[in-house]
Image (cartoon, rainbow, N blue to C red; front, side, top):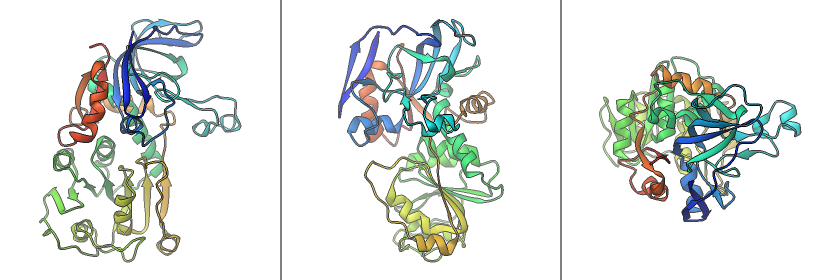
Length: 368
């Protein structure tokens, strides 16, 4: 079979490798689509060191069962399934305490286990979730990232009728927007790329702000570039003199109730945190580069009684994500911009960094 093998920083080769045989309790999937995650792109550039080369990348996997090993009971040949990429050991203290997400011996598809940028992959039955008929390739490409967002919403537990500030309108930011828009008083989203900001507006953002220059799109009057304001949140972790603060002043003079970072950028977080309302909650969701440090003012958190949360990995939320997609509650067509053949795997990483205006979520179809 053909597989895109990551060999180290900046190097991927399409190789012919043996088709894996399913072991006991495993199924062999013919991969129908594997989403290109931002983490994959940053692994490729050497910014993230999660993967152990040589390894086949790709952890957002959907496929068709073509063979099953002994003991597999819930799936049979021809069934479609999505893959939970996280494989806990089940033996360490965390796993025995029911905290598999902190597993001391974790394995992960596309990092330490051969992933989905290949024609076939073997998966434990316990990591498979049935895909209903009618779910499109683009919808399937969003199952795993949407599951992480569903988990993040569960971690945040937002109250309805509140104001939200989402940092970034990439794949994750647009999924967060779709999860929040029905119950929020207002969802404000930041985005530097004009075309992505327009997508956010189309998907229901009440106000889209270019933090470099003010309101990117929305129904409110645009603030003149170069006219920063301090906003209504008072003193924060860093001095606030920015178009973001000025654009938020009218809508949320006391600040926003929730901030969700979908960028992994400490600069973006540093600019936004002072805009959090007293008693508000900040959720760190985007993955920061390894080794990056961010100076937080504990005194500011203390005085404002602000809550700082993080969310990582979808704890058993794959089925809920599939259900949301099957019901049409998440618009995949507006998020998934391109599905490419396996031979173009490396090119998709280039597109990820260079074609941000036209590309948002990309995926690989190894069948072509």
